[in-house]
Length: 271
Image (cartoon, rainbow, N blue to C red; front, side, top):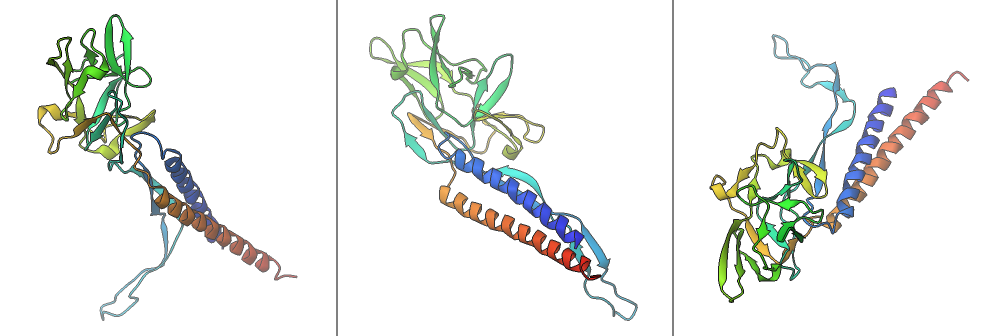
């Protein structure tokens, strides 16, 4: 009976973490570029009371007698499928379709990556730069911050699906800025570490970033200007998962109550 108490307790702890994860998904249903997470579980150790055996006559116990000790959360995997597209008509918004990430410089060589293309224009020292909402620079394929030509507004800028920037000059002619958005992929995207603010950072498990412009990736992402990628969270699915997690939590609590009742009955036998 004591085993059942700890087993059910592990189930309650795991389902509480599952509810926390689902709640975070629902909270970010309107977060640009957010990728939903899914918690995965594994069983704990098993106690073998009798092993399956065979003697020289091929007779014996055909199956094991084992009892488990509960469950534990093992990993929170992030689902990197593309979310829906929202047309914003804002020329500094970009939807990145595919497996690529934008490259962001947070200063002092701190490079992070994002799916959030809701960029802004920063004016300073006579130059206009494309930055994140926090003011961090967006990098081009040369590893430099993306700056616009002098006296050119964002409404005159066009970005093609490969990230190449052109603009309309004072004479109404289309000019090539010679700048391309740096889009990168990773050998193991699940190994990326989410650090908040829609940013990811590399880890030994993710591998180093691979530039799509170098042609070393099997697929190439596509940039769509004046659009944003919405969260890929499906509220209906999350509500179903929340109900399942709640019922699992309730059933584990019932198992604890049942074990407690059995212990109480056993302790009352002497009366």
